[in-house]
Image 1 (cartoon, rainbow, N blue to C red):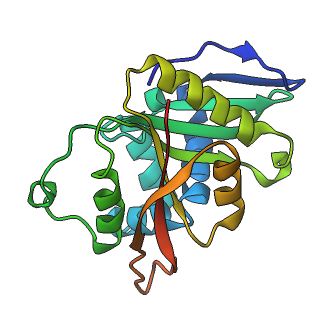
Image 2: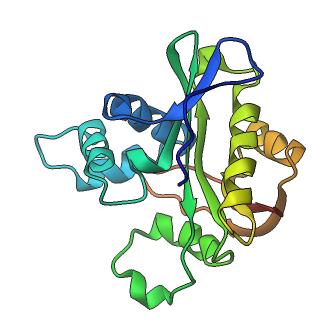
Image 3: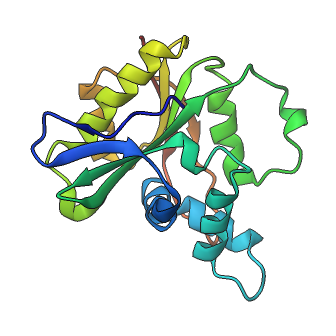
Length: 204
């Protein structure tokens, strides 16, 4: 993701900056919040017996081995405190499902939706802490996504939202995103997100 310098925005006291190592704990927490608890459930499955799900997730973010990493993250600060997160990256050319290897069933619908938009710039995580919500920070981060997409030579912008998260969907619709495809969410004993996953896209 193209890094943004620390900048003062149109929101008084709010700045946007690239993530740094000290932000890893916040990124882990905000990723899980935005993922409706799905990230923590998957981290729990992979963690060592003596390791918490949160510790495993934080270590993965610090390792940089997946797209969930510091370089793909921008932090919103309000009054000097971490208030929110935007994490995104370009999606690669579509691949065959057989090439994905052994992936959890709950992830398959998400991967299938991502395959619908190869070459798009993908907003994977947009999250704001509850105490900073309804202050325009999420909308501000969406304008940053617009700016990054415009300079990334992408086919368009894309994100995936849970149909049960009506507040997020209304926000994305107001920013110009429209539903392109849907997949039923897979419910398991430890992952109980119901409804559907919605792929939403926006032209650049």
